[in-house]
Image 1 (cartoon, helix red, strand yellow):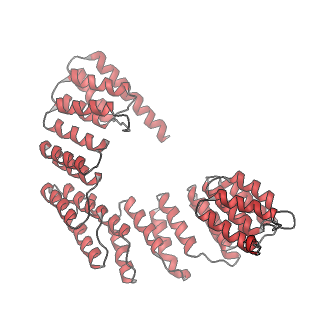
Image 2 (image 1 turned 180 degrees about the horizontal axis):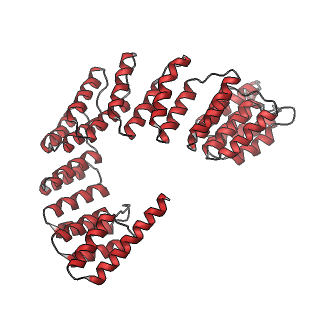
Image 3 (image 1 turned 90 degrees about the horizontal axis):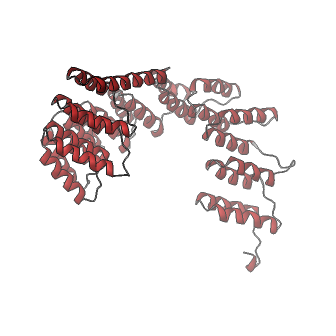
Length: 434
């Protein structure tokens, strides 16, 4: 611009700095900021707020504070927006105490707070799961002439669900219209997700129906959560009926939807129908993923069809998917159910040699329990020792079963070791609860 005789002003600089921050190019934003001083253009509060907001969003609050000191002087003090950005930055990093100190400091300076500032602070309480304390500031909002808006309600509803307060969340959602606040897609998404996580599938279906009656088409995530809720209980009819409603509303099922339907069939014991659904989804342009194959491998292993499970594994590999820890665990379970213990141990050995998997006790536990059922205590105890050597902790039932079998077969020393481990596990769990 200077080359053609045009000197950029404060608006030009602020616009460019904002653009660079939005595109994650903060180096160029800071370079422009330095040019402002060189060209005799003094940064203002908008410049400050743009850069401070970027740094606070990244959790770089100290850098933001240094920048604030550099930009602002006594005649150009931080305004409510600047302070709100800092409060939000502290809240996002879990430092609610520092956020409240800034809030009180702002009030003491006589800075008039706005609805946005209140919503930021209320969100801070929600983030640290202290939603009930947030109502102190909701009450204060009323006193200052700021009734809660859609952001306030959504924040509180999300906070209640996060803390397991289902009735409070539902009650608050029901009161929104009393304050002339109409629930939006975010409100319903929070509601449906919260109900799904706490296994209130029928309430989730009611939310879908309410949205449709209000001329709102639920997004795919909402349909999928409710469908999956029914699927987990093996309620194939309701899961399929919801999918039909979804299609009728112009929302196409995706891989997640088909995985939920496959889960419903698997949980209903209809393995052939589950396998057929994989072919249906491919025919309709949706491709199976690792979850799809894991569901089908589990289903075929549960009925002892390990040869078909191996076929699915090969298909999975041919499609370019890498089997994960769950895949191998289900194959171990299938081989154990068929009494193919050598094959199960072979998979376990391969798992042990693979460094990128996060290990847990489940595959060890499956093999140990099956060896106990087969009265092969020496083999069971060898696998148990492997599990212990890796620092893994099994379930109470594992220790109880193994110690009982060892004692009954005369392995008294080994039984005492396993029993002592069981006692220490129980004590640790009690301490965790306390």
